[in-house]
Length: 433
Image 1 (cartoon, rainbow, N blue to C red):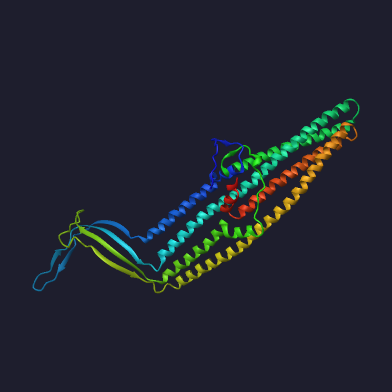
Image 2: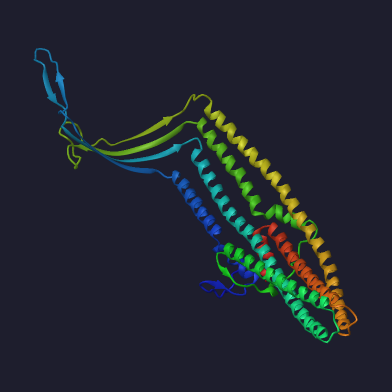
């Protein structure tokens, strides 16, 4: 991922751009948790690889008999005689080297399964970043919307305050009814209340954003908001079906299930192992014999085992593994359809927002012109104060509408690229910032 140089403060970050926010995703606690799981899966994969290697064990045992081992001799023409055949204290030590020569492909199947699960964990980590980016994009757009709405309301607040001062002057000179003064004053307080509401809403959204990136965010750079180019035709759908990390995760689930099938089938084969033992015995830790039997008892050998019948348990296990594989396949096919619909719906939403934005811009232009006209008429006492206050409030509303549509269009455009996959989004969007 392309890294940007960030000026990081220990407690908070000021005036973050969209790209800088996405660079903070790896600080998220949920991302860190998934990263640890990825590391765990890598360790399990390495552990599975170790099954291909021989094992070496060391053993040492020491016993002390209650009586010295002996034997009774019954010889013709001789009385029954007892003879010692060992010592009361007996020690044995061994180095055991064993290697599985054949396990019915169980080891290779378990290694494959661990490898696929490790690849799954890596894909899940990337997909988590994609989902976090979607949430951050949505919050970023909403915060920028609130900032522009606040600017529009501040502009309206300034205009309504000027209108109020003029209306107050008219009222003092007996040129304006008290009810009209109260009407414009009420609109003034209404705008102030809306302004407070949106300021608090912005603060709440910033808190949510700070929680996701695990960093205190104070404000954003509104000028970093821009409309993104989107793929034409069916390009987005094709890219998503080929590149989406969550689809790859589900495809890996089929591979994992196939490995489980192979692992279950391994029970149908015999297992053969080779063993070599370097062993000594004696009546002391020197293991140099006990004076009765030889000290060196080393040996090499082969062992083979084959289960002939276990109540059809292995056959049922194989059937279950195959069913799990088919279930994973059907889940993948259904999810592909969901992804296609998701991308298509986002494309339709972008078209709708674009049309609404063009209309809203014209509405804003008309409202601004009408407000200027109304202001002039009010100054010449041709209209009421209530009509002026409504024109000012309507202008703020149209500006807020334009800001909302612009932010949502950015959100949906970024979302479309994210629906194509994180790596695609990183290449097509972040690399162009």
